[in-house]
Structure formats: C-alpha cells, structure tokens
Length: 335
Image: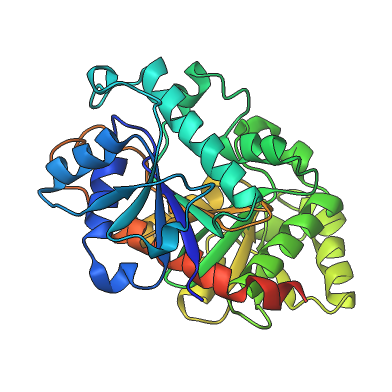
C-alpha cells in the first residue's frame, strides 16, 4: 500500500502554497503516495495561480470518505482564513491562525490513522505566536497537542546527512546549561531511531564538540572531558554506533565524505550553518520524537519572493519523499 501523506499549505502569505502547487505538478513524485490536501481550497488555488500550474481537486470529508480512491487530489476543505485576509509577505494573526488550525486538523488525522504522515509548507513563527502557539517552536506545540512526553528535537537532513541537537531554540549564552549526559544520550538515541525509520539499518553517528578544537585537552573548556566523552562511552557500551566528540569545524567533513550518516550537534547553528551551506534549497526538517513522520522544507516562508512564482521546490520535494520513506520503514524500525 502507498503511504498516505497529508499536506497542509503552511503560512498563507509565504511561499508554501506555491511550493505545494509545484510539488503536485510533479506526477512522478506524487505517484509515490496517496495525498490528502488539508486546508482552505482557495489557498491551494492561490498556489496554482502563483506557480502558473493547474491540477484537479475533489472535495471530501477525510474522516468519513474513502479519499484515496477519489479522482485528482483529495481535498479535506477547511475554513481558516478568508481570501481577503491573505496578505502576501506579511506577518498577521490571520495567517498564523490559518497555519495553526490546519496543523491541528492534520495532527488529529495522523493521530487517528486517517493519514500516515504530514508534510507542511513553511510556517512563520511570529505569525504562529501571534495566533497563540504558546511554545518556542511548532515541534513543542505538536508534542503537547499529542501528549508526547519523551525527548523531542528538530532533525535536519540534506543529501543523506542528518543532524540532531542537544539544545535548540535557546539563547547562545544558555547552551552550556543544556550540555549534560542525559540530553546527549537522548539526542543520539533519537537520531539513531529516526535514521532506522528512514531505512538505515545501523546508523553511523558522530558527536560534535562544544568548544574549539574539542576543548584542546581542557585548555578551551572542560565540557568535552567532563560530560561529552563520558556520554559517548556509555552509548558505545550500549552498542550504539557512535563516536566523538569531534571539533565542530571538521566533523561535517566526515559526513560530506560519506563516513557518517548523522551528527549530533550541541546547539542550533552548529549544524544549521553547515547544512545550509551545503544546500540551502534542498534541506529538510523532520520533527523528531513525534509518533509519526512530520516533515517540512528547512527554509522559511521567503517573504522576499512570496507570490513571485520563483520559489525552488527542491526542499519541498525532498520533504515529501522523506515522509514517504519514513512511512515505508516505520513499522520495521519499531520492531
């Protein structure tokens, strides 16, 4: 059976609707899954206009109808924002409310087994916060919505290289307070599990250091000696295929050379800068720790080009394909 992927447009005023129109115009890619569009019909039509493309949609009740058998793309219509309230390239409460409402519906459908995975167009965090997100990011919102209490972290991937983070959306001055054996172990385990869900049978993982030159034997900081090395050794004792810590300015060379599958970073930009330099238009974010695959392109809403029809669909296509792959391997990896 094909994976059942729910797709939501994301921020209405950004490039999400355009990207989804371009994705759905790729018939070879879309053949990988049964697709349920979740959102306001006029947002998907707006994306078609922006992209200069056209595809058929069949309205349905995703909860009740056999939507996988419908002609064209099945659409579970929502009423989250009026066309007059869609302001291109602007952060608004209405836009954030729309994105959050469509996300809620998709989460409920995935939780209830209507769809197997979610792929969403880029969100604007300021808009989400205006609309009542109540968390530092959408991942923590999803976790609370679904009652997830285990470790969660955004994971990023590009060209087969994956990263997880010991700390994420916090001030740089607070990072050191998050560096402990428990969080390092959780970050490694989550990346190992997610890679297995993606079809990698025995992931090869490396841990990045916190300090320059991996602390230089304590000359530039003691976190490596006192915390990170002991954490890595304990994981190795549990037969986890992990090494490190490696200096963060060289560890990505190992990944680029194909020597490792995943890197565990200590803070947000430590991994994001490297991946985005290697391919900003193809990076994907996976919401790690959620009980089903949730993916999105790693770039933002691109207000500078929203509505122009020039957005690159590469990362959105990769996010869709990764969601499909994760569904295919999910049950096998869980055993």
